[in-house]
Length: 256
Ligand code: ADP
Ligand code: MG
Image (cartoon, rainbow, N blue to C red):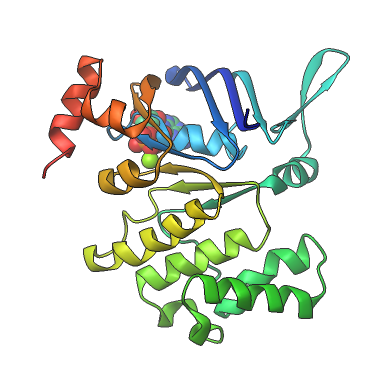
């Protein structure tokens, strides 16, 4: 039995009077890949941001690697953590964004070593050695001294993945990592993500790349209207979805 890395129970969230997440329950086991799919506005980004405590939940609980995210239990009551404590609590998780979010004034290697040196207090030589190893893994060994503006979108996103890996996260979150890329650059990023999956990195990926989801996901979760409509292994969810809303969505996005 695999241990769950992510455990979400009864999570709800509103922005003002608009309920963006309704009773979300989801488990992601260690070493597996979970792809979140669904129409724009379904709540996918909000859910993934709640896992990282970039958004607060109104109700329910989220555990990452057995730790309650963003809150602590004191005498049976939940208290929100102070920002510094929440940041430490978040160390098991790293996130890759649609628009890369690299530090423009740092070199590629500087982007990767910043958090290990500043947050985890690693020694520079060690952070740089591991950073170079990660750059090799994402195929960018020759770019360590380049600045982000000198890179293509696909290269920037691969640096962002290396930067996320530098904190040795138990969980990697991706929010539409290839949506901002020119079509010919999508493959190089998906290739890196595929290799991470093969190495057993636990990942939650919001994506519209159905081919990738089919090939790499252990579980695909279809969200609509702030709820999980249906979830299952790729063959079940993509080839024989049960719910009419899933069927309608897939008939629009699955073009062969
Ligand atoms: P998705 O990623 O599936 O497209 P989001 O999680 O980004 O969906 O958004 C879900 C809904 O919540 C959308 O209707 C969006 O407009 C709304 N929303 C997202 N973030 C905010 C916010 N900070 N304030 C108000 N509404 C928001
Ligand atoms: Mg989104």
